[in-house]
Amino acid sequence: MNEERVIALAGLFQAAGLVRSLATTGNCDAAALEASVGSVLRLDTEAPADAFGGVGGVRYGLETLIAQIDDGARDITITQIAVAVLRLERKLARRRPMLEALREGIVATQRQVDHLGIVHASVLGKLSELYSTTLSTLRPRIVVSGNPLYLTQSTHVERIRATLLAAVRAAVMWRQLGGNQWQLVFKRRQCAMLARGLLAGSQLGR
Image 1 (cartoon, rainbow, N blue to C red):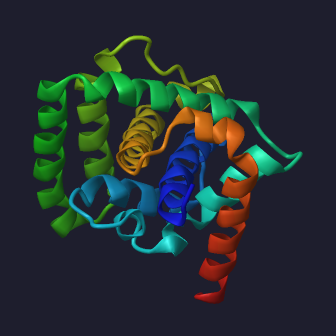
Image 2 (image 1 turned 135 degrees about the horizontal axis):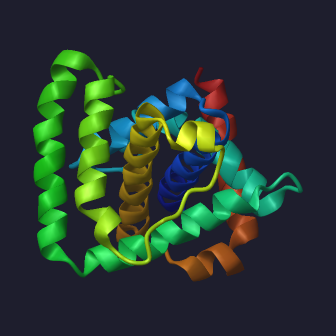
């Protein structure tokens, strides 16, 4: 386990936490949402932190990751979402045409971001549609549970799907850096220690 892997993993847990919050309350950490969606649009970064605009972009994810693996305040649903995304990423990795379709769709959406901003409804709608036509066709699908009041509103559903796309982006980075699910089981303590160090550093840099 190293810091880059932990940042990618924090990105995954950040998106999972955002999805959970959006599905149950209709709201989420706005800065974390912008950083996560932004990571989808930054495809060719050299390091995971760059995808999120710096380590501060995954502050919420680091807090969520620590809570999930080393605190008593864990929310099992967040971990279930993260594990489901990791499984989905494994299926995606074997489907090159879908990977190419995702890249093309993201590049097309980048043009809108320049004019509208990262979390504009139109941008989130495009990313949501991209998720629906690609990743949502893989089985088993990721099932998000929550408050029906929010899960039946198109604007909330679009934010959730765009955030799930961000979760998959983080999972891809995690795998590319040599991450695997066994590390979540056997290197939890080391992961939590590195996450705490990164979190402290990001807070000092405020």
